[in-house]
Image 1 (cartoon, rainbow, N blue to C red):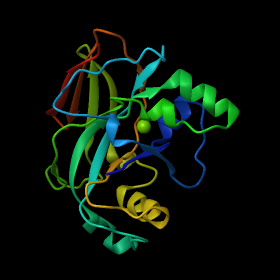
Image 2 (cartoon, rainbow, N blue to C red):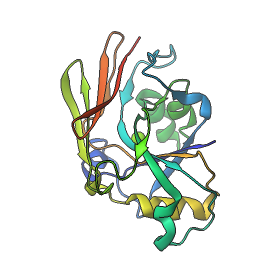
Image 3 (cartoon, protein in one colour):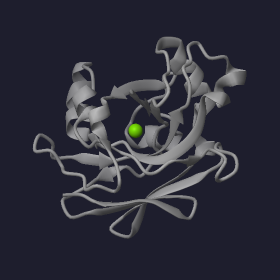
Image 4 (cartoon, rainbow, N blue to C red):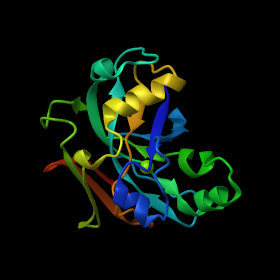
Length: 203
Ligand code: MG
C-alpha cells in the first residue's frame, strides 16, 4: 500500500507558505508506517521542533489503475476519510532550501493519522464538502473541497500516469490554509461537515 500526498492544492495555503502553483499537482509519498489509526495519540519525534497539522480529505483507491482516463477516474475510489498530513516544517524548509527530497519531513512515524472511511457519496458531491480541524477546541483549519486547484478525478489521472494505483492506496488530497504547529498536550479534532471523524492527543 502506498500513501500519496498532494501538495499545493489550495490557493490560500500556497500563499501562506509563500509557495507557487507549478501548473501540475505536487506529489510526494509517505510509507505505510506513517499511518496512525483509531485516534491513537501522536508522539512528536525528537528530531523536529516544528510539526505542523495539515487536515485533508483522503480517498482510498478501490482497484488497480494505470494511465486512467478522466471519464473513468471517479470509478477508482469509493471511500473517503479525514486525514492529517503531519509535516516537520523545520526539516521540510531545510530540505527545500537545498532542493532535496522532503521524505523525512513528511514520512516519519505517525505522520499520517487517518479516520474511519465512509462512502464518497456520504455528504453528497465529494467536490463540495466542508472539512475542518480544531486544536484544543479552537477552529484552526477550515476548507471546502470545491476550492481544490486539482480536483480528485484529476489527481487520480495525473498520479496514475506515473505510478500504477493499487487497491488500498490512499491519496491525501491537500490542505487548506491555517496550518500550524502542534505541541505536547494538544488535542486535535477533525470534522467532515458537522460529523466528528478524529479526536486524538499529541504527546
Ligand atoms: Mg499536506
